[in-house]
Image 1 (cartoon, rainbow, N blue to C red):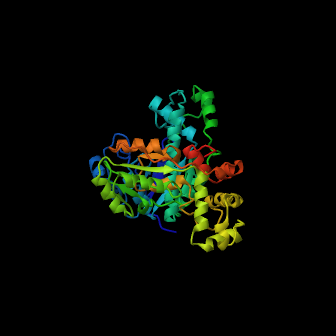
Image 2: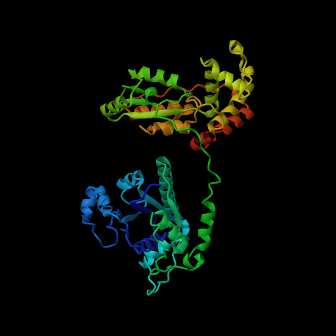
Image 3: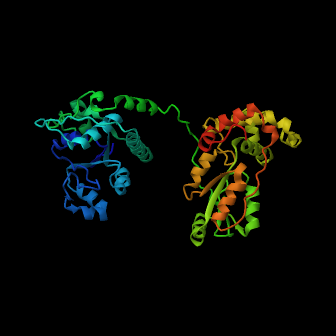
Length: 461
């Protein structure tokens, strides 16, 4: 195990981080420097200097303060870091395996109510000799949702950052902070095995040890909101698809007007759109990321767009590409492993639409399993979910317009006029009549539920 030379406490407001800091500061050769990277103070309220670094110097170079905190040999120093503290030091903290990560959490509704009470009373810490100020607050659903979202995003970022770097953390809950055995275990984990027992700090007491119904004026409304919050994410659509790159070489730029950038989704109406763009003026493709950036700089006022196709005809297109592709091994695996009764390659050309429909139904079931990571085959761009394709685009450029194929004449006409062109978009191609089958519609929705929900596709194309 790496010998820790410093530590960080990842926490949030009203999670007990003051008590944890007091416990650590009660141990010799251990110092927690408060909220060292809080943008509104230096460690603690009313301080504008810490370890010889001023607030202005920290703003100019936060890593200067980071070095100053940890420059004392034979001393374990650290600080508390919240989700809204200086983001410029987060990666430096995470990249350092000798910096121990302590993650402190608390029931989110307890934290939110405690924070609102602290704002209402201006009482942020309570010592044993002080008297708590009684108060009650009104539950605000939108404020709580915002707080919960920020907390979850912060914890997700920490968790992912630890996994990326092959590190681990010491996870604490609010209720652990008054447990001497847990505090002893924490210090031993930090490397202070010379300590027999660590007692929690005794100079701070709980501020609001009352029932929640006494602290919230609209308790029933709060209960109703928490029921609707879906804490276990029962309605989340799981996504196991591999992340996709931005696919810049497939982008097309048109010089017409102030410039148009087409970001095609494989399996969509790309041929019709490319023909439409070519009729407007010169079109260029096979771009690099650098060439794309240069084109965008040279075309102020340009507009970028993509066009989505209903998942059922898009899967039908992918199925036909599969039948015609020069990849016999893929078809062999679909036959032998995934039980799709494709005829021998030399007989594929003789298939009619009626012959293809039962094979297509099997292909849709394969797509469902492929998109949730239950097959050994990679997810092909031609049948990847459009949600994930667009997420890949966003890693380098976001489209100004996400059009639907059935409305592309109107939608792309609107976009063209925004780029200085008085032209309607291309007319859509009607979906194949053979696909008007309830069983196929159901199978397509099972395979592409993320896309149906994300983009509002109807059941019938």
